[in-house]
Image (cartoon, rainbow, N blue to C red; front, side):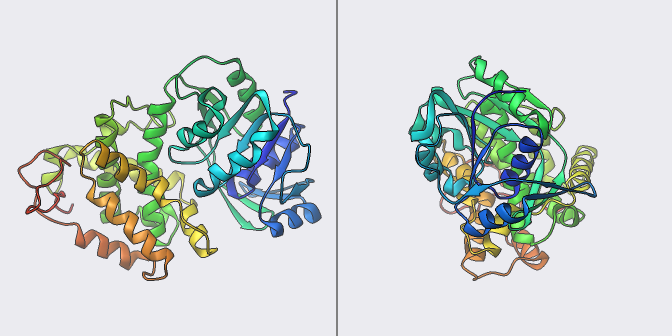
Amino acid sequence: MTDSRNLLMGCGGIGGILAAKLLDAGRPLTIVTHNPSIAEAIGQHGLIVHDDGQRQTVPAHATPTLPAHAGPFDFVLLATQPPQVEDAARAALPALAPNGAMVCLQNGLCEQRVAAIVGAERTIGAIVAWGGSMLAPGQYERTSEGGFVIGRLDGADDSRLNQLQTLLAPSGPVQLTHNLRGARWSKLAINCAISALGTIGGDRLGALLRYRFVRRLALEVMTEAVAVAHARDVQLEKVAGTIDLDWVTLSASERAVSGSPSLMAKHALLLAVGAKFRRLRSSMLIAIERGREPAVDFLNGEVVRRGEESQIDVPLNRRMQAMIHAIARRERTPGIALLRRLYAETRSEVGAQPPYARPSSNQPAAYGSAL
């Protein structure tokens, strides 16, 4: 058992389930959630987790603000949504032990944002390979199994990684990596497809990936993200040790044809992903439904911004980013009809220029023909 002193910032889908697993295993944990209704529900009823048909209740206490003179904490587990991660890091910084570390559990590329606040040597990334959602304040559902991949942005060895591995073990297997950057970009590419399509489609992942055109969109948006990663000299890591984003990327020939054995294999992979994570519901969609800011600027928006820096055009990611903002403003209604519209609007013949190179001003961005 770890004897570290731990602070959890954020108690949504991932944070709530993680808190329940840690407390149930006897890990010391202080919980802060800025949502008073969540704090009240946890105090009255504990953390209630539905996992694989089982209902677990773990007694817990949460506060809306960090208690005065709290800490010092060895680990600050940042489990907020990406738009709130920097504020959470600033709020918790005074309570971080001198040799402590902040742990980024968000999707996207949040380690660099947190490192700018607390220092790179006090920042650890933890890629979450399982899904969870909050059904109601203090009530959670684990939607898929999995563990974590943890490491530092500089790839350095760090004794704190072994301590964090022990701390997180009750929630699933924990793998250490010397290539956090590559693992993050691989996960980012998948999230740009899964989370964004889930938001626009307004449904769980399993239902959406049954549609062939949705799988095609997923392949295209991941291809754009991988192109940007390559332009930035990122060595991509396999996701969960099996999903190779370099293989998933559409080749120029695959973008130009209506079908091929390699395309069938990639569609089969996405069908398998849809089956495994069939209950997964986009956290961005949930945020919009609750009147909160979606994290699209930290997912597809990161690809757009880094693509501009690297002179790589990513028209599908850009269009999806704009569409999700329109959904958040209640200007668009999520659903399969909106996904069909996105698909129709992005069809064009494959141009003569290389895949995803920046188009000239008089030439539309090239997309593959429909499968």
